[in-house]
Length: 555
Image (tube, rainbow, N blue to C red; front, side, top):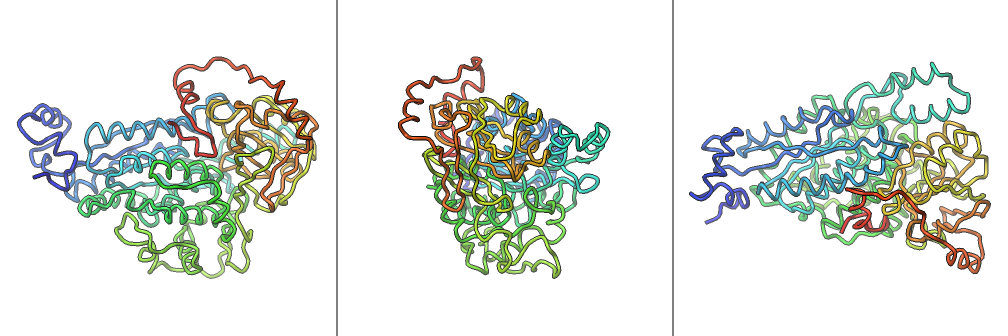
């Protein structure tokens, strides 16, 4: 009879015929008694590529210790990471979103190939987290996600976005060389993910709201004792999930994704959450679409005054209790489904039952009577410029409407040169196209140009459109994920300099004010942009990736 706790590993270690497997496992530390234990993979994204992940080897060892002490047998393995912050503004950034798929595929490959019974996955940088979660949903065997944790603030409450915006200020003559060097030298003091409500902290919060990490995992500093305990407890708790046969798709329901969207909105989170939640839902076989973000966003306010649009860092949110008191607030307002199951084996409501409120006098998370914005900052826009949808990040501080003259560029590099050269003026609509999933290929993030715009004092004076993506650190009047992308002949490819563009985030519309007959003529004369032939992983990705409106999943 098959051991229910060893549904998979028994196949690889039981019986005379598996003696060679056991022999090899003895060489990596297995003792005789370990062959009768459930085997759990600890997927570590450790590397020295980025400060986001440089400490995760230690967290993986803590998870392994927790798993071993709980009576399972841990096996640590690695997957890759790409640093968005380091590759930003270069052609290397094309590999960032691609890495999400590579991470998911590599974790699936090891876990399924080695027949592990369960999985702890630990992610730090932006694509690690959705990559881990996509693999977890795809494999559908007991699993827990651990967030690597947020970085401590740099001197003067600086962070990586401070450096990007300093580049724009320097180009405008507002900062000297030595002042720029000073910010560069002090903004990133050590391990951990970028310190605002950027993509990493947004996705960590979303995953906790999904129920796939232990309570509190999303709001802990990377080098804290709390994060070490979280990692240990994840390994330990996994044994309970194996015992009870609680699998990811038992947790990853449509209602769980609605909870995640709700929390992301309340936190003022990254536009990348749209892309990544769609992709995770795809792997979990949950029907989630762009319009779900609009539906939920109509009733959920932005409550957290956090960067990039707000004032506070993640470390400061952690000091007052993290996201759990916020989730409790949302639950009390019937904005969260409290009956959703979590990796604790308990429901969201049960997990939040003993959570303390935020301390009185704190100013980071607002009440429902005084929200930062009464409805979502994440706007799904449709119109003749985005017939299949686009994702805007409109905090309200920059207004909700914009009309201006198009300044189209066929690459990020061209646009960056114009911005830093002082050629972008008030009223311009900066367009960077041919940067979509297929056209990039890879759908680069546009933190460098958007930060340069902010640094030059143009954040409220220009709009920014792209079929690429935005970093979670981006703020201003920005619209990304425009579909169909320019590479496929989408309307963005037809825009000419001086065309009037109108964006209305109240009506959720984005349009080019050009006669349809004229657009038809342009379409007849349009030819795809010729680019250098891509080979290797970028070529494979371009051939298999779906639209950003579908989460840019590969098929």
